[in-house]
Length: 427
Image 1 (cartoon, rainbow, N blue to C red):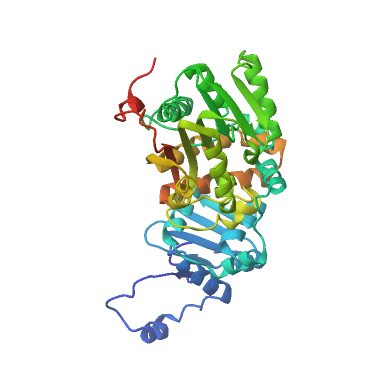
Image 2: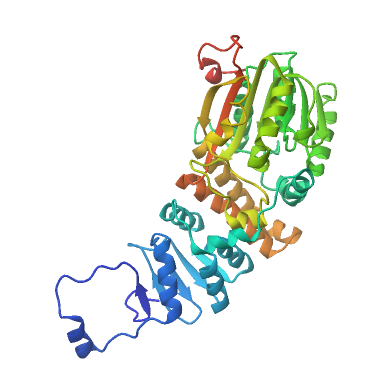
């Protein structure tokens, strides 16, 4: 549709400084038709989203353009029902309608979502009231297992299509932006191990070990003994098999159990990508577990997606991707260690590293989209495309952060004097 089409509604357009008055133009040229109710409602919604530079095409032929310059994307809403749901709860139903094809996007999906994140920073939508209806899942022992099964037990073959060969499903660390994903994931594991100042012969407990890459890396490269806990059956079976294949059974033990049941002493405690699934109500419990595990020279590291200000996880992500998840603020993360005899040694934010990690994942996912569709269906493909694209946008826009918090017993004086050890080359 051309921008001079009379059915196009311009949002935020500036009035002409000169020229005939509207009534004169109407009389001479004929008044353009007034936009319909649906277009006016869409216009109000887009204004609440910060008027991002996009165009929305409705099923009835009307079109609404916002922002200035060329739109980054054209959004097609294919039915009145899809629009009604979007108006009711945009955060939830954009994802639902995009997944089932009721909403289509032509153009840069990541850029579109980033503009929305930037335009709605700190905003509260009327639809958010529906969050009070008991949608969120808890993180009891049984609920946590169900939540993790929902996401991580989709099948190793699926994740193998687009993760790196080590099957690392957490933020990578890019020594330089042009580094490969494989290089960056190895660098991330080294970065964690160096922060913990691991020494040969020490013992490590890992809470939430994924497919076992970090535990195996710590044992092989740093000579430590590791007990790694996870409640994803698929991941534990995969990790245990890999440890056996590498002859590391005597140095790495993978335990299918909840972090709340961890017992025993260790020199270092590490959790990469699990805290998002713990829930605020369980932070004190996690803190007590860490306190009971670490000895007098103990060190610990928590690595988690987070936020600058408290906010619930996106409603659609909570429903379809990560049920029960919550990205904490830095203050909330620190509440795990502050009540106990720990001192925080280092805090690092790897937000842009996660955005770049996700770009690699999305590119590989799109390269495997036909195989993913054969394994599942088209709705699944669209759901995961939106999840990955939306995550890139959230990190790029600053709506999400990635915090690494390093801590140690406050009486521990056997600590690195500088940060040089984090960046020195390792053969």
